[in-house]
Length: 301
Image (cartoon, rainbow, N blue to C red; front, top):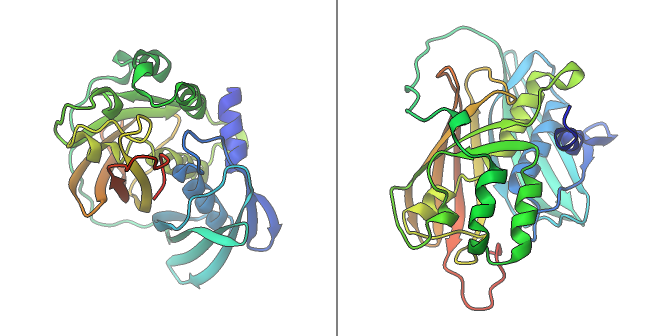
């Protein structure tokens, strides 16, 4: 297994310190706070540890309360809300230095048959025809507000092979376009052994789901984003619905758009499709989207 993928898996492998209490650490972040996808994925790991394996997560709803500090551990405290005949509900609060920074509720269900339909998969070029992050991002090094941002960004995405279908927001600053973006992604390597389980694939997709999602808001306004310094932003809430089985180590198309932005906030939604066209996940997120005042640190609310 690739060392960077193993590092990510270790990051999501929380330490259990009591029956329903877990401790996680953080990956160095591009912005001066914990990456939202990381804390959401770790929180999902924590609640999954308290649910029987035969019940799979079908939805999660979460709120980002405070920016986390990558230099301090995060404590995840799980509350067992309900264990019903078909559904299980859990709630977890992530605490850092005595303050809650994130809260998540998740629902789990026994497998069962039912009515089935889905929206068709949108058209997209094959992922192999698109440049990798290592090939694409250095082309736009002059777009980032600080030279070290590119190195941090490349390091943060080493475990994820993420390929943009269209030009990313940071490459098109000053040129508004349709508020829609597509990326292909998969983890860099194959899950095997004990690491190859449904929970791992769910949590890895949750980790990636916070990447590039709010960029669709920026596209409508020709804004380059948090890395370029022309936007102050942060995630406010994040919701996901898990529809069909998928593998995070196989290509997934992440199709995102933004229906609205107003009052310093922007709304983004996403759909994740397997390469053979199955709708696997749906995502919604609202975030703070502000034009910064002079002297405002990037990534602050």
